[in-house]
Length: 132
Image 1 (cartoon, rainbow, N blue to C red):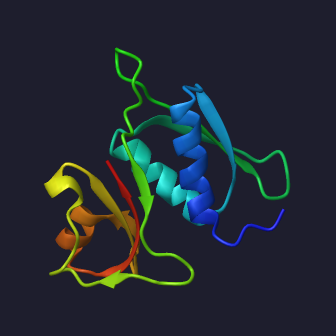
Image 2: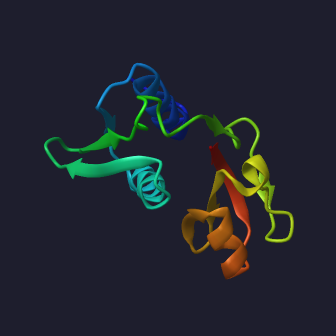
């Protein structure tokens, strides 16, 4: 199956699995997807991730996180920069998600990082996704 936007596929799989209250979801692996999942783990949106090298490409198993009442921790995931319309920002105009309560995932020249880390490193880049 040919996927034109693998990051949108990753976000959609996580969104659908958390809405259906699945304990985990499997995603085809790539270095960018591993970096995005690691940011989600570090920011506390998902419980954990494990990389399985069972196939040529490998698989990322994302363990989802839920609140005590059963609601998903991730309230929303949105792809910002798409293949047809790339969105770039500099460090001064870095977007704030939900007035600072959410997280923007930015692809910079120093790697994939959150909006807070990009501001601290004083770098801009492509805005990949918003998570809240």
